[in-house]
Image 1 (cartoon, rainbow, N blue to C red):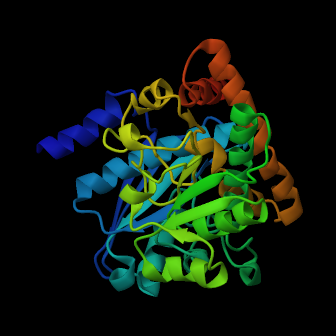
Image 2: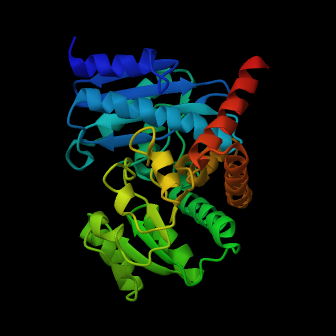
Length: 360
């Protein structure tokens, strides 16, 4: 057994980050599909979480990411008040070169083989059109196009929820929920980030952006020439006078290198698993930086796709997503009362709901 494999098994069976109910390794050689479906918990209902299509360096890295993401979905769905547990899937490979109809259909068959224990949706590297293809093989695919009975792009409500989390952060820290006059740095202006920028600008914020994709930056600056562009994330987190930092790309943005140099007073973004390792939340608190837990504020998308299973209604979903404001404030209050960082407070609340569901 390799050290990497042993590390994955240790996470799954023996660490506090594990406890997953089921992990499925999927392969279809004809299409080149290699996928991992991780189900962390079904205590609250069928596991719900997106499918990430990403060129992982190793299979072990892909499994580890699936485990982390699935666990995060359990907490996200619990905090969003959904009757769903947490699951996540990853497809290994570059979606620009490997993705095909044959591969997505094969993946859909694997999802279907779980009999509804796992409900999938879009994530990094997968889109509405992809879920339309997956749904041809399984009824357990959400995030489909309206033409195919779905709700469409979930990034719209994801961004709306993050914006509500920012408003709650501003209310807690500065006594006013408006972002007018605040300087907000958005790292990643892709599917979710560019919608978030629109909310921020409409509320009167000053916005600084960065993205590894030039076309994503250009889409924002062509529409809003007054938006400032930072060279990269390293430059963005050091911007003088930054009030809020919004990581909206991949996870691990808050780490031993970034936290000491971060100029923002608040971190609130759409990316999953922003804390690189346990203890980072305390490092943020020690520096006086308010952290809005990622899985709480980015739950707008999962609220949308969950609603799709029952006949999608956008207005109903937006009302639910707007409650992220109150949920975030409640977490800050719990953190203050218990003398713990907000991330730990959110975990306690989510774990309590899952524990109560298991006992009932």
